[in-house]
Length: 323
Ligand code: EPU
Image 1 (cartoon, rainbow, N blue to C red):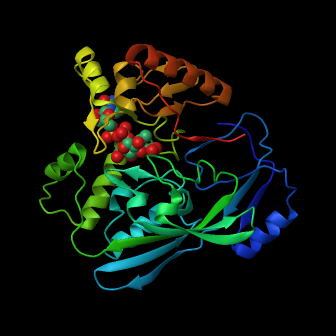
Image 2 (spheres, rainbow, N blue to C red):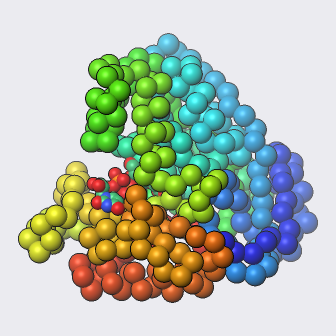
């Protein structure tokens, strides 16, 4: 969806970043594109300069037996990082298997799936500070992580380019994600003590049934963030909609899956012009071919209104919209 970028700059190292930003007019808009799997382009030509980081690999930074520290360049394909860790028996990111995009993009929206978020394993990251024209290091707590959120999505937007992430992983037993779909997969495949590779296979298989393969079907994965409400509001909603799924969260709120709300509202599998709600998952909007961003923006507005009217909650879009 959307137009073509007029200019793309590929950078390999800090020297390239220095050179690029020294050349760039101060008012010029730029955007770092990872895998492009969570980004929506505008219709027509894209004036924003697209910056691509070349993949710069994965390295074992330290190993003390039980614990290992793994570094990955920002442009490295994220799933290659997961594959490397699973092959070497390093536990911690197997639940984040088969997520499209680059390693440097994972902290931006604190990527998460099946009970793991990148914030659980990230020790620190390095970023090029475009204002100061230098590489800076952020510790985990300095990243301002939240649910699908970080400093890099908020006040750091337009300032930092993540060039390296450093993860703390461990050897030993992997934690089996506590999700019904995962348990069903192991039961169906007669796996009683899953290995790290079994967990990666399970997650990969489940993801590709619930989420369309972005190489074949155009989507940005989950379109809306899940909704968090008070216990009282969740009880009220469940009284009114007995089939509604909800999950208590440690902080005393209740998670209401946005997919479940859209499903209950009847959006699953429905087509609106060139867009549709994926047949296996109402949280995913699919471009059936030829959809424009303005068509998408209209659909989001209507869906958000409908969900608000029905359930009294506000849906929030999750992908990045660039200008
Ligand atoms: N559900 C429905 N109908 C639907 C879709 C979902 O009833 O059409 C119900 C499911 O049955 C389940 C609940 O909603 O009880 C939650 O669904 P699911 O487990 O598939 O996960 P999710 O909360 O919709 C989140 C992430 C995904 C991540 C999965 C797996 C967000 C916005 N999305 O989805 O991340 O893969 O959990 O842990 O938090 C992404 O961000 O692009 C993404 C794919």
